[in-house]
Amino acid sequence: MANESLQSFAEINPLVGLPPRTLRLYNVLEVFKKRYRSSDNPEWFRMPRRAPLLQKIGFSQADIENGLQELVHANLLQIHEGQDTKWYCLK
Picture 1 (cartoon, rainbow, N blue to C red):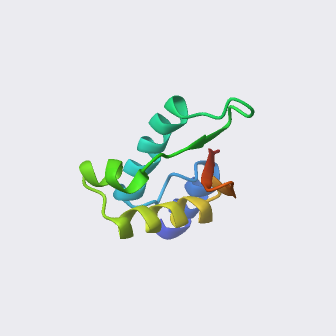
Picture 2 (picture 1 turned 90 degrees about the horizontal axis):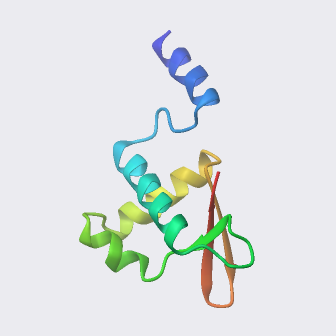
Picture 3 (picture 1 turned 180 degrees about the vertical axis):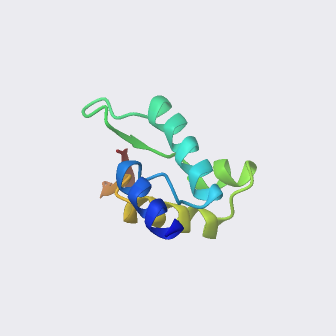
């Protein structure tokens, strides 16, 4: 029963049920979104040197990759590669 409730809340808010580290990554991405947005399409942003920046605040490379995949799976993040740059879009 509790699992069904969690699932129904996740349908309303996809952040429900995500691991705490993934939620922290989502919040960090919000900062990147404001700071490194695309001039052509402001919904998209880049993360320059993402691993060193995120490792300074306690994320390992595996944490970053796992968190990004969990956010993509939860339909909270899109990733697009173009001209040696990965672009991200939070939903």
